[in-house]
Image (cartoon, rainbow, N blue to C red; front, side, top):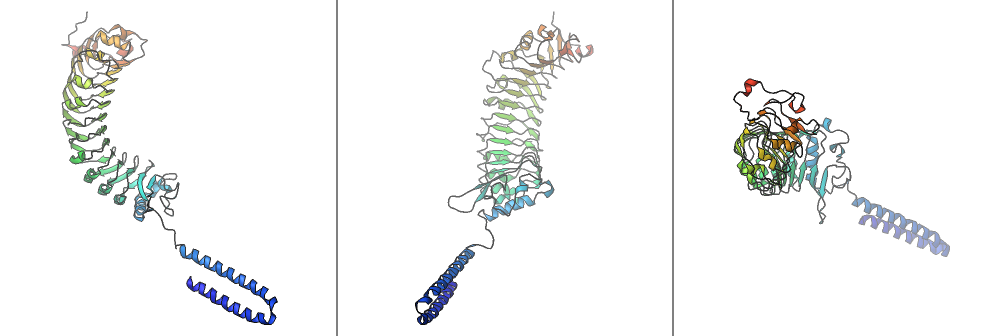
Length: 447
């Protein structure tokens, strides 16, 4: 540009010199056209210099202000997906790498960025893909997004293993990959994600064991590994003192129920092969939902379980429990509304003390070995607060409490397949009773 200015200066100087000499012959009238030429020349030079300055400062192509390596991860993520599954109107369909991912509003859907105050490069801080049915793999380069705090790919068809490079995402607080087709083990390095609050890997095809050191994730609030093929014993999770939701249901976990985090509010260990007693649950005073169904748990269901102060739903069905401890006095303070204990080996008389749980409205004691009469207290509750009572497939005998005969009750109940004197015109008796041969040995103390 200095050379350009020099040329303009020399040309102007020569023109001035020439015009000045010529003006000596023509005197004053020649100065007016000379002034016009000078003005034209200077304007041309100014325009030329201005254009040159602009050209110097315009790069050959537009440079992104998002970190290049972050953009490369997004490109790799999209390239690892079958393009046929990237349907129109899906988030990935909007990703156009002719634009900057962090600056192009509405182009990179499902992406959040950091915008540093020191004007350094923008970084990708969250990827939350829509459930569009993306079919492909989660690229190992995902581990290069070192500012990522949230990664969610739920309800898609991501296949293959979860990359071990996940361990590099030290700032991650949420890892949510449920309802995909991931296989292999839970990455061991996941225990290095010390800020992780939500870990949801449910409804995949993960196998092997739960990492024993998962208790190192002290910030965890929610842990869901349900509906996989995980095996082995449940590790000691008592150190996860902030955990309020634990769902390990529908796996192949065995062994006993371990000591559990004291602040749990929701606990589901259903559909496994756990055995032994359930006393570790009795100390979880903040539980609102408890589901231990479909295991091999056995022994006594202690009153401490049935009287957990905040529990609204308790499901201990499809186990091998043999006895239910009585609740000695009325409890108005309990929140329990739903108790499901069907398909166990519970025997003896129906537990009258259930009427002491003030808010109880739905009870299922079917498919057990209860015998004797239906307590009159059950009849009183069926006519008031109990809205659902299932007692089928036991060995109950005798006459029905009068409330069971009332066809106007707006309740759901089933008394079929017992040894009752159950009139066939009573809707609760539909399905018939056991044959007399099945009822031999059962004592009927009715009058």
